[in-house]
Amino acid sequence: MQYSVLDLAPVPEGFDVAQALRNTTDLAQEAERLGFHRYWLAEHHNMPGIASAATSVLIGHVAAHTKTIRVGAGGIMLPNHAPLAIAEQFGTLAALHGDRIDLGLGRAPGGDHAVYQALRRVGSDDFPGDVAELIGYLGPRRESAAVRALPGEASHVPVWILGSSLYGAQLAAHFGLPYAFASHFAPDALEQAIEIYRRTFRPSEHLSAPRFMLAANVFAAQTDEAGAYLRTSMQQAFARMRSGTRGKLPRPVDDIDAVIGVGLRRSVDQMMQVSATGSPSKVRQELADIIARYQPDEIILTSQIHDHAARKRSLTIAAEVMKTLEPALV
Image (cartoon, rainbow, N blue to C red; front, side):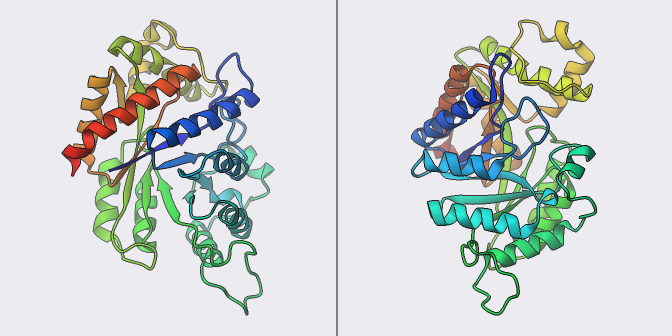
């Protein structure tokens, strides 16, 4: 099973965006060394704790500082952009870096209504049409077309549909595209989405059979207690989002219930239920259980951890765990 990394380029408390971007570059190089298949970056706006707003720019930077790992968007929030502009951006990336670029497309705005207005995309609400238009720009040469993506045309950059609801599953199946589910923060519709995607999938020129990617959080350390401690940064971040508070990725705490309360912590843990947390043996068991339950074709792991060195160690443990799981998955 291929295993990959999803990175939001977190900006930890006490650090700035420049350091966050250096961390992302370093983590991508480590992921490549460890044998991860893809390194995806996600588009978010107006969020002090996330440095990947200019996603295409950051993808180009990461691709330029790696050699073999696939680099892409997990994803581009297409309602924010003209399909032609995205086709040109990713066509340029493909021209620079060859067949290493992926384009995951999401329907969410990646921010609130004020962000949507600031991006000048008010009134655009035809996601299926935009996806079809974008795929057309990246497809075969169209010499007679009034508008062509140059660069972009004939690049055939692989397109994925991302989602956290049944809509994305239905759309990916309709277009015959690979599908990635945001189960690392929105797992409620996961099982139903998988079933719908696989049952209604229509083979296409892009894909002959369904390809489903599952996202999972990983907070791996030498002990269960250390892993749980690392996890508290993400628990606090989700709790703050629930209250409408934006900020950088919080420092971990010893007693998460004392900081956010038991009730909110349980709600956050429900959001983060597709996670593996703790020592290598515990992470191995929890990842094995996730894979056995949902049967993904690929798994993409994300680790929102405040300390960069701890984040790299978590990634190293996750890679070692996945390698030990591989014989059992064949």
